[in-house]
Image (cartoon, rainbow, N blue to C red; front, side, top):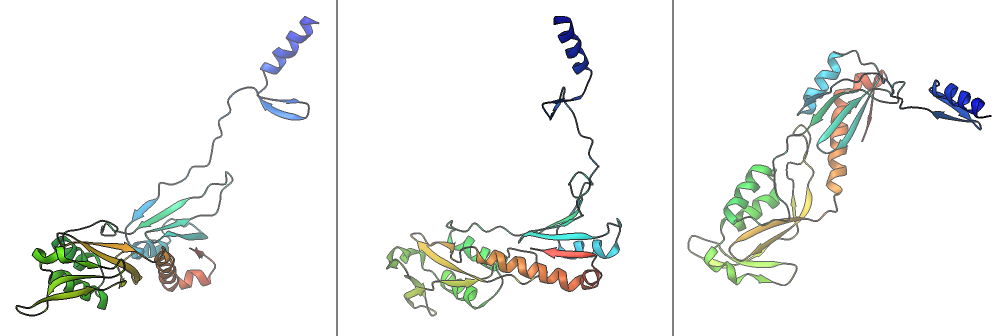
Length: 235
């Protein structure tokens, strides 16, 4: 009996996969050899991504464009036999930094508003208020919890209480520069020392608008390929 059992175990040890009670078991570690995938190209503009697709440089066949978020777009292949995809190219938007929910001194805030926000009516109003702050009087800020008033210059030598506008509709650079930057509401707050901050107040709805803008841009630029069922866009 023992001899038969030893012989059975010996036979099992020579097998990589065995069947026991109708189930398959591996007798050792098995490593799958997968189809190779490419190292994706990374660009920082939608134009670069469009040029690549139009060139058909890699002869990639049917592809899927996935607008992942307002700053990321990926071009993917169909799944292969290992259920993996080639990621042919990825576009990553270069977005200037602005720390929302953090206070800046008035000079830095002024510069950031001019350099990282699209010019519109509310931006110019905020710039006017911030640029004319009388810092020595900022401690007289009035605040009812919703709106604020500050001492600011309203003429050549005149100082008066100026109401801080709230909410303000602004368009920071938050997605690819080739598309329209979505406007959204922000709460503008000021505190002692003339410090200013912007707090997002749209619940993140701007992201959906930005992604839609990116998808619409790509569809317009690649319409011929879309019509030929070579490219599909999702966001």
